[in-house]
Image 1: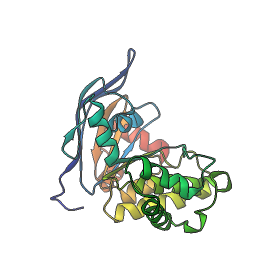
Image 2: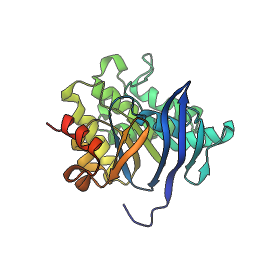
Image 3: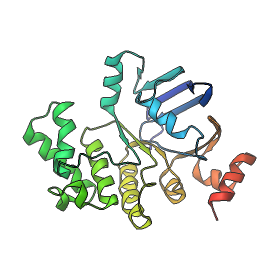
Amino acid sequence: MSDDGHDMVVIKNLVKQFGQFRAVDGVNLTVKQGQVLVIIGPSGSGKSTVLRCINHLETPTSGEIWVDGRQLTHNSKDINAVRAEVGIVFQQFNLFPHLTALENIMLAQRVVRQRSGAEAKRVALQQLERVGIPEKARSYPGQLSGGQQQRVAIARSLAMNPKIMLFDEPTSALDPEMIKEVLDVMQDLARDGMTMLCVTHEMGFARNAANEIIFMDRGQIVEQGAPKDFYANPREERTRLFLGQILH
């Protein structure tokens, strides 16, 4: 990551309430172009809600979000423009079961990017190659392992040429032996300079791929820092307790 990378995501005093419950409580965050930021923390700490606010899957209660210099407002034109630049990969693969891997990757390109069938197919095949499963182009989701389905989901996001990729616990629904193949794809993206925000429990990935790690608890950022310092010398007691539980 170069130091002159401009700010791709800027979050100012983000608050998200569900009724009386404050899921996100005053989060401030900046992600530079080419940076890989990993967010960790216990369940219910607000990690996924922050990601979902970035592309307005959740509407912030208050605060500001800027994506690549454009402020995200309630205006649907703004929301669609930002969503076109932001890829998101969830725990669940959300593939259409009646479409092949290739067709799943082509669909949004045709609808959102208005690409011709030939162009959408070319890009889809290119991205299947990139995630390491070009031979699965004609397979349906039901014929693929969980790891392969998640790689198709990643290829589908990449086919839209996003400036930023959001990963919301992309390996948590996978069997242990399939986790590595998905993390390898994410590592490759990080090496290629993709700007990434990842919510994950995979500490090895966080240690190897992240430029910065954020620990959240109760809707707030408790601590953030470079992986080396974060693991070797956490400053906050809550961080130490959390790391003690997961780094056996």
